Each structure stands twice: as structure tokens, then as C-alpha cells.
Amino acid sequence: MPTRPRTFGYETRQLRPTAAQRGPYNDKRWYAARRRVAIRDLFTCQECKATVGIRKGDYHCDHIKERPVGAPWSPETWDNDSNLRTLCPSCHNKRSGGRR
Ligand SMILES: [Zn+2]
Image 1: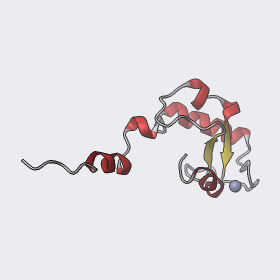
Image 2: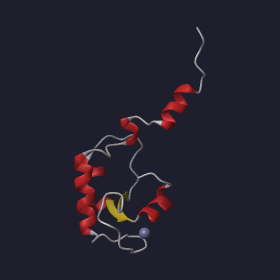
Image 3: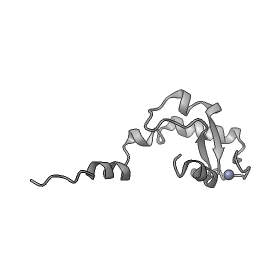
Image 4: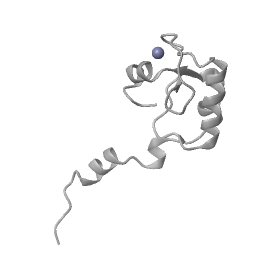
């Protein structure tokens, strides 16, 4: 029986993060929070002041204080308006390298 390559598990994790590693981005509470923050910020990027669109993906919600990787849902991190701000996709990519 062949042994699996030692990197197998690692590579799989890199390609397909577990739900815990992705974080609760599919949580409807998160959808509600980021929409609420975008409305508060008047759909304006808080970095470059560009107006962002209102469709999902047009605006990004940034954690001002970085969320711990793999952290589960918690109101302090994910539902706390003072830790969240609206960014346009390009500012957010610059800030987090693609991470949300
Ligand atoms: Zn921007």
C-alpha cells in the first residue's frame, strides 16, 4: 500500500480551506453586518473615498482589527460596527492581499 506524499494534507488545506479556516463568511449575520456597515459608510470606500456599488462583491467589509484566522463567529469580531468599515475591492486587496 503506497504511502501518501507528506505534503498531501497540507496542499489540500491550502487549496480548499475548511469552513473554520474560511470563517463565517456565509453566515447570514455577517451579510447583515456588512450591509449595515456599507449603509453607514454611504457605500463609500473609507480608504480612497470612491463610491462602491451596492451589489454583493462591489463593496468589501474590512475588519479594522484583523480577525484571528479560523476564529469562529463572535459578536466582537464579526458584528461590531466599530471594528468594521467599507472598502472598495482594490483597496481591500491592497490591504489584505485578497483576504476578506
Ligand atoms: Zn478604495
